[in-house]
Image (cartoon, rainbow, N blue to C red):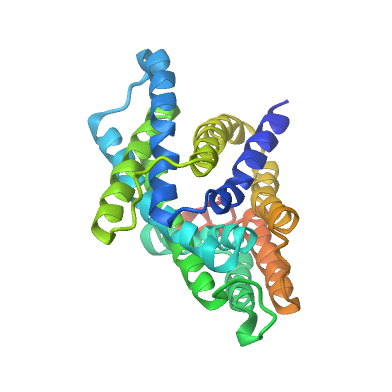
Length: 299
């Protein structure tokens, strides 16, 4: 049953990029409202469970900071969707596993395994192929810009994951941490939107109908049930389920927007999926020093 719950959650968030594209608003407007519409729902959920919230003020501040980082990620992610499509934009965001592995090496001195040493450059080759290598048949209004934005989004998302996990280390209130992070997204995207002049506060339909759906389906429902289910599953099952999101986004992009990739981009998709799956499934890092021989995964 837990596997089914996790699969439903991953499928829910796989629609995010498609819904962003349907909303047809600026990247920061999409980021601001998908979080703003989610805050009241998360607040009600947190109030109902706050007696179990034992997080410190430092943890709560860190949760808020993770939301500011996520605001940057969403800005880049939504911009990448506009440049290269919903499917490829989502796939590029999922290369965060590479940057998490590299960060673990740099920060925690956790030496990459042989699998990671081989898979990481392979993933970057796939990223280059997604640009279409200058060919006229490449999908996207600006595939090169889309690849750059998507790769930067992956870096920002990896930074968010590391910070968010640190904020949720007590595991006493996953909903509270998600609420703090979502408030951080609202403030981060709102300030960036005001500074750049790209935040549109007008409520228009059906655009905001899609944004409400993102908030409920992905920002609340998807994140909450994934946060519940994935820690209760074996690492291998979790790794496989995580890959459903980019695969689903590619499928929805093709079905709804007729996103037809060039042969070069198709090769890039296959290379990235294989590389990311190898890192996820076989283990991305090997602890240095005394624990040689045992493995841990960074996701």
